Amino acid sequence: MHLLRSSLIAVLCIITTSWALQQSEVGVVDWHKNQIGVPRVDSLSTAPVFHRVGEETTQSVLLTATESNVLAALNPVDGSLGMKPFVHLSELST
Image 1 (cartoon, rainbow, N blue to C red):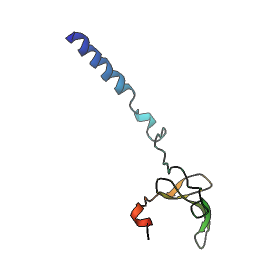
Image 2 (image 1 turned 180 degrees about the horizontal axis):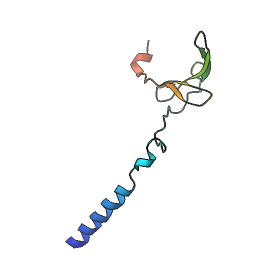
Image 3 (image 1 turned 135 degrees about the vertical axis):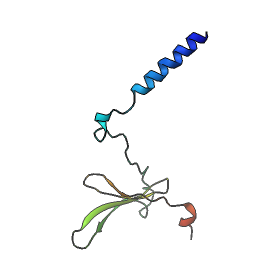
Image 4 (image 1 turned 120 degrees about the horizontal axis):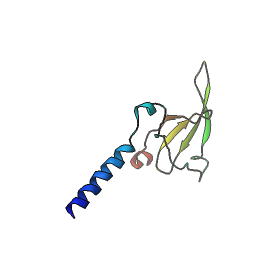
């Protein structure tokens, strides 16, 4: 019984190390993706809107609030995340 348990643990250790990121995949394979959550669309004040930023070279950003109290600015060209601050509920009450 002890031999069976030891060999099972050894096999599990070998299998889990084979799932690790290889050196050749660094910078090529990226599993991290920024998520902002579900956008709030229940009213016009919280619905996503386009906004122009910058003076010399203007860019468009998509401003949105989410159900998890995240305010985000998204680049509409490539979908990259400009900012993602978390807003606490006490900051919203006036």
